Amino acid sequence: MHTEPTVSACGAGEDGPAAELCAPRRGRPRSEAAEQAIFAAVEDLMESGKSLSELSIERIAAAAGVGKATIYRRWPNKEALLVEVVARLESPLPEPSGGTVREELVRMVDYMRKRGLAKRSRWMLKSALSQMNAWPELREAYQEQVVKPRRELARAIVRRGVDEGVLRSDLDVELVCEIVIGPILLRSVLWDEAPLDDPDLAEQMVDAVLNGVGAQPSGGRSR
Amino acid sequence: MHTEPTVSACGAGEDGPAAELCAPRRGRPRSEAAEQAIFAAVEDLMESGKSLSELSIERIAAAAGVGKATIYRRWPNKEALLVEVVARLESPLPEPSGGTVREELVRMVDYMRKRGLAKRSRWMLKSALSQMNAWPELREAYQEQVVKPRRELARAIVRRGVDEGVLRSDLDVELVCEIVIGPILLRSVLWDEAPLDDPDLAEQMVDAVLNGVGAQPSGGRSR
DNA sequence: ACTTTGCGATACGGGTCCGTCTCGTATCGA
DNA sequence: TCGATACGAGACGGACCCGTATCGCAAAGT
Image (cartoon, rainbow over all chains, first blue to last red; front, side, top):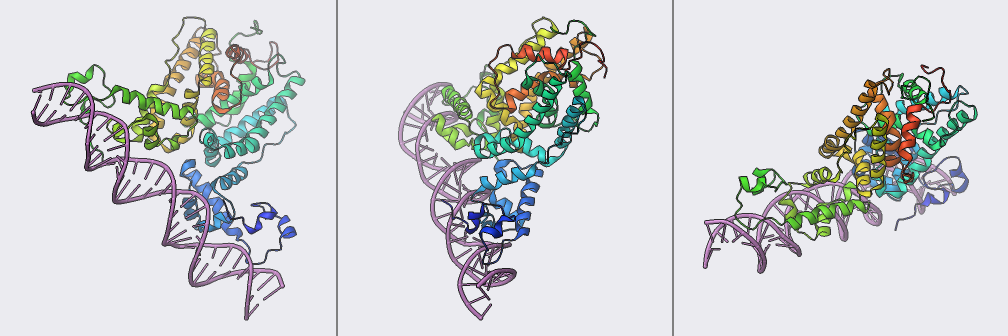
């Protein structure tokens, strides 16, 4: 199917400190610059609004100023390349700051807001949704490496809120998570034109969700 | 660019009562069966999980048991066909029932929940999000014909709630809409595995959003 | 009867893409 | 120095696709 690259015994695509341990390579070493150029080209193409199906190896190679062989030497096919791009793309999760649960929620929502402003992440967010249906490998990588840790972070904060008595304990934790992050995801992923500039947006969202959008000033809370 | 079909003066794709008014066609009339077969084929392909870029005219024609020319006689290109498919796909909006604002919100959310269970709509929901980036015409048709009326329905209900004093008036109407429909959209569109079966889900979501997920029983509502 | 149009099928030119392969050259270890 | 491997460039075969055109036949009007 695919000509096994000589380096593959070390773990594909990894040339960290482990490389010299298992394969004291003989010939000319692979160009780090070429690799960076490939990643940069993919990200540039994403940023320019290309859809997943428009990201052909040929286009990527041309944009990177690189021969196709240089790509195929590193990844067996398009999927593998994009999976690695996905893995590299995401910025690190915001660390728990030790503040209030409300503050943590605001931080998380605001992190998502800012990320919605960054084109590259936005491309990936959107592409992750539909195109990946036809691409289980890519979809799974994205779910595993991006979605899952974020959902778990949200769950952890919500659980802490329940434990501390700040959040209602009669609701499903999942449901609370969805209510907290649903609105910001709606804006940052689903609706293109929605404004994300307001730096207070996260705070407004979290407070509205915490206090409820219903107008009853005090009574009748448990339906 | 494209050989104008003879029928086009009547409005493409429409062969209702208007047809005989403007063009007492001469030769063999177009086969209604072929048209239905084409629509059915596209929807079947969608349902089978094909992505937008996999929906080629050739594939559609083969699946419909129809010649390519029969498709190109009706639509000038792939986009036009898919735009019409999108237009046909959506089920009618739920009508206002005259109930409480809360009941209306529950009805709307529950409608979205049920729709999330229907595969065809789900395909379109998901594809609408990313793949259509590369396809402005299709995206616009979807936004105009599907998204917009739903957002307006939501806005109308929320405004009524504000007028009746059931919803907080100190919040942006858009924000309230997002908080109400964000969670259900999250489940029905973004997360594949999320359960949508619980018939009480809509009620739970709406009530949680109305009452707030914060635990404070009465005090400290305005942050 | 005769024309007009639609039908399914299929051939066609032109295009993009994939993944492999071969050039001539560059850079490493031995 | 020499073999091994990398590099950019691009040719190559095969696949798929688009949109048009052409078959022979079918169904309608005049």
